[in-house]
Image (tube, rainbow, N blue to C red; front, side):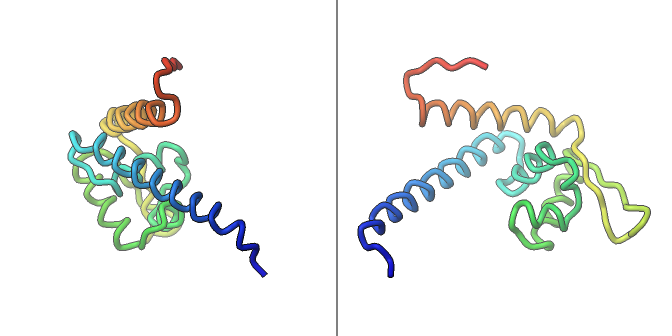
Length: 131
């Protein structure tokens, strides 16, 4: 039986988590807007930065939680705009391994700085934090 006294705590946690995720995604979109890339494309660049071995459509799907078709289309756009490059796997020609290009580094740095600033303002208002 569920302890009914815990339900309000869970609802508050759910509300806070949902609000944080929404603010985070809005921050990513705003930071990436000057570079003409979408939220999903930004998530792909961040995923490739954080985990360079998560470099195939299948691995990106697992990491980001989207379908192969959606990830594939976004990767193709990133490739066409010069943010990533792809190399066909010699062992399985159906698989393409993606890697970041120099242009994506500028985007990733801008997005990370924007998120750091946004996070500091949300969690540490009025404090001057330096890295």
